[in-house]
Length: 402
Image (cartoon, rainbow, N blue to C red):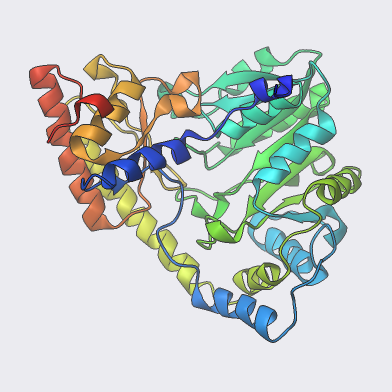
């Protein structure tokens, strides 16, 4: 039997593959500190879980819902994006999905024809490139460089735009680097979108985990509401990764297409989970605020610890919960260093190239773990890299150190 040729164009997320290798190593008795998955290590706030449980057990919310989400949740999202982002929208412009990835996929499906170009950040969330290629588009990498604090170079973006460019993807705060776009960056990108008639997919999933400055949503700029897809969700802010709840705030002309794509793919989003999401947005924010404060403390711990390791440098991330240290001084590929640290030190991070070719020379460590584990991980990484410098011996799956 033969797969459809389009399957050759689809990628994956290597974070899940790295986690599987780490679990296999743990099964042999090794202790592994997990810094690979972009998932808060906190439980969902109890009031959110109780609201969903009540909807399930007492409210009978076990049936299909509207394809775009239940009306009370879309109303709550409209109020929330106005409060946090300054975006004016109607409930008809909101589409709720099982996780935020469908918003990316639907954007590509609805907008990209064969050969249309999609400019995306590289390193960046791998699904941008994967989905653009899968639907027949041409992904065009916008390199993010450490010298520019891992921000998009807006004038370089201007040079990448061609008559085939259809979609510009931006992500701030950014995965994997933790960078943020400045207000000036965002305003210039808006000018380019208007000048070249581009649609912008603004991935703001980490928006409430920006630690310096006030986030600026590109959809709020003149002329941009009608050409911006704002992506957000509940996974990162409210530690609801397993709930699979995301949403898009769309231009009015695009919302019907997303509705049809939902109907053709998943029908609708889980009913009782949506009631939990209402509580997340409208209920007490203490747990989310406490989680944010803890991430800020861990960020400092990680950056200070990594910069104290000879041969490693790490810029301060401005959002999300990732560090992106530079390990190029060791003269090995990012993949080699990531594997070495897993099998020699029992620390599971990700190669920078898991997020694109321009991630070479870096690793991504998530600091969504306890301070105790983060300190232990830094100590192990330092000892392992010192051992590598001393002996030159890389440790891999086939040569695991006892």
